[in-house]
Length: 325
Ligand code: SF4
Picture 1 (spheres, rainbow, N blue to C red):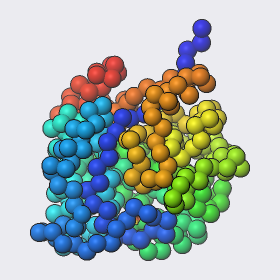
Picture 2 (tube, rainbow, N blue to C red):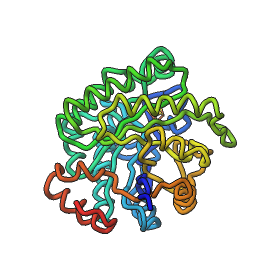
Picture 3 (cartoon, rainbow, N blue to C red):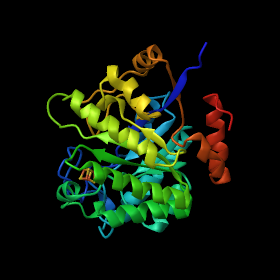
């Protein structure tokens, strides 16, 4: 009997420290523009400890706590207070026996180093290159190419296992997708810390979901295959399963996808696109010869390089998943 091929996912709960964001990306439906209003200059919608603890407790199966934050300007009066919130929420996750994974925009070297001591992995989307991305990011200073490249380099210098990704379908050309993948590949060859690259199809926001058409799927399947060829083999390729028709998912795995990312009960970035229930996902994939296996936010190969205190904690949780690392 042939062995099933494996596809990983991370049981996850998402905390949003704030939706306040100083960028204005042309496609964003996540951002809120409420001015700072709390003591210390914190954004008005900042997540408090009690709410965060309740959200974590409500998802006992979620080993990853994704901290997905709007971005606070580096010179904003509330920057320090916002950053301390990120640290506090990370510690709350650890205290609850979970692992934080922060994705909060560009960080200074000191900020990234501090968060990296309590986050086994972190993330920042590369997004993409070319005129269409430039247009949509004209109001988003932190999404300039040089800023994103420096953040990936900085994470590499600090040895932080890192997730990045491309937002696909915003009008970029195939050559521009290849150029973006080549940038990530070069950084990975230099530092070796890029654990996964998300290939995220852009989907329109509205009252309901607009599934990918067969033509759009065909276009993206070509990009998945190119990503697999361009990126070093240790880099996992991730696809958000709520943005891809379930019946067509096996074709994406055949093209090179080997991870489905962190799955919460809902997608806070794309709320119109419901997450498939893990049991339904596992059933659909099993029928096509794939085994869905849970993982931690940090992929197994990057665990040995973690700081010893963090590594011991991660290894203990890995044992609960049946991973011997
Ligand atoms: S950085 Fe993120 S939250 Fe801010 S506007 Fe852009 S997509 Fe929205």
